[in-house]
Length: 147
Image (tube, rainbow, N blue to C red; front, top):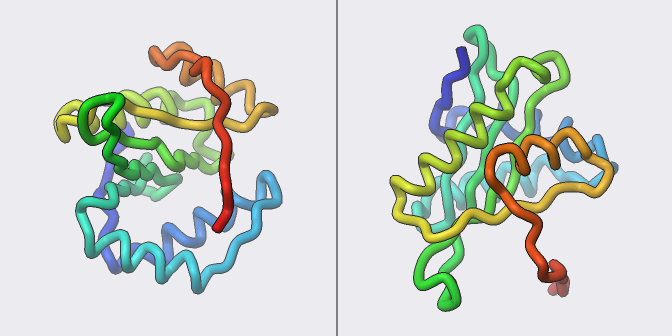
């Protein structure tokens, strides 16, 4: 059975270790010190979002992060499922499906208007999970400008 444990300051080392594993999959740059500082900031401001550790068989096997944005188009606060990571040893156990359902329920309880996410083009299993969970492919192109 999967449990969702709200992230606390004492868990920052654990979540940054998991984040390092996640980022390594696609060779994303990762700096542990920066990540720890970001989590400290994140935990002090409920307006930024929420994070949970995924606990399966009494072991932390991943994490889920929702970040918040205010949208005029969607008439209020929306969320971005910023990160969902499940360690390989726990994949294929229905944890992803439960985590997505949890994120959707939390979003409704928080009166959010929309839940966005992005997924790597090569991650077909995650794409299938999200499509089966009711997400649709957005017709717009996601773009970025790094400052």
